[in-house]
Length: 506
Image 1 (cartoon, rainbow, N blue to C red):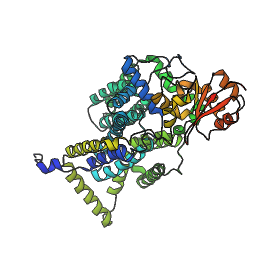
Image 2: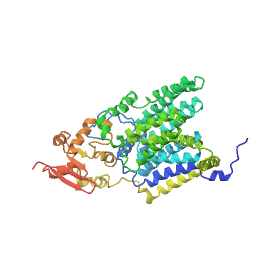
Image 3: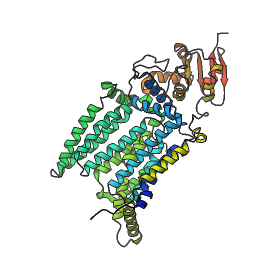
Image 4: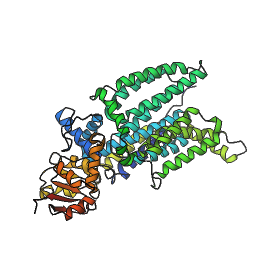
């Protein structure tokens, strides 16, 4: 039977997948434009480091950006993503960074949708659950290198699930070059090995239960791919130092505990309620299906639910890996609807008909055209100004007035502002600390907190680090203490930041 010929209308109509892609892209690029750079200052550091790499054509191996750790050995484990972010910034400023982040975010949503449709989930259900994945991924939608990890987790899972469902094992050879790329982009490459291990363990279990099922050959391919990925993860400027550095951070309990994104989700947050709803829904569907649930999918759901409950930054990974299984289980539950349930059977027929109609449409030209139109609209001069640092969250005006502050030497800066200062004021202002806590370590971070919260010994720490001026929020305890100190003088003040300069003893 010949495939149905596609006329012009098939190329001009949008698909549900295309609608989902355009929605995700618009949400990231336009809806979030006003606060994309309000939630985290670390992107400033990434742009700064990437810009210096492009300028010097060398990857820094020692710290160049702080006066507290200057010259100390530094492991460049995100250098490639920093170069990419810097290149985007060089082309179009913060709007270019927003465009890159939106594209990565949209890519992950599209791969999740493609995974579900490949599994036989009707396009309407895939669209609904794809939108759910989009909401869960938006929990941590920040212009940072972790967006590469979210996308690559989705790609890894798609390739491995294709092989698990009978595709040629040679497809797994794609994982090695992807791992080389991933290991140079972000420390989250460890998730690739976790996903690969889970699929390998599943293949081993299936080969033991049914030796003639083909799972044994899949296991051989997965073991080979795992070895190649391990070798590929070492093809970085850090080499053998990459693994102990990326895994070592997880053992630094103090740093993990004080970092907001590593904490358990707060379900009083409106957006995080989406994860709570997804978790409860998945549990209900599992209760309905009971013995009909694929145990491998169940292990994925349980494991990454636990990861997300332990650390809020893992919620997007839950949205990538667990949501497709929830969609598949929902479709299986609907297929079990008895014939006498007329509404349920009618919905099934409608979903199948919608799926047949949607799969006959090309769709991607319309989606690409819509994304190009959104990009052109967002990059108009009157809209590009929306991509900016939030002056209510960062010391934008204080940095503009550095000449008035007359900063005489080493600074004590608010932790969250370190990345912005590197973006806007380096090399004039080497920072005390920034968001790269895995580099600064627990001891310096504790000293930062002792100074900011004016705990015993804070004056001695200021003296030890030769701090000559401070740039902090007006409500910080340190600001109140310096305002009363005779040897400190207030030289700048606005609603976001105050600056004090050490003066001569009276």
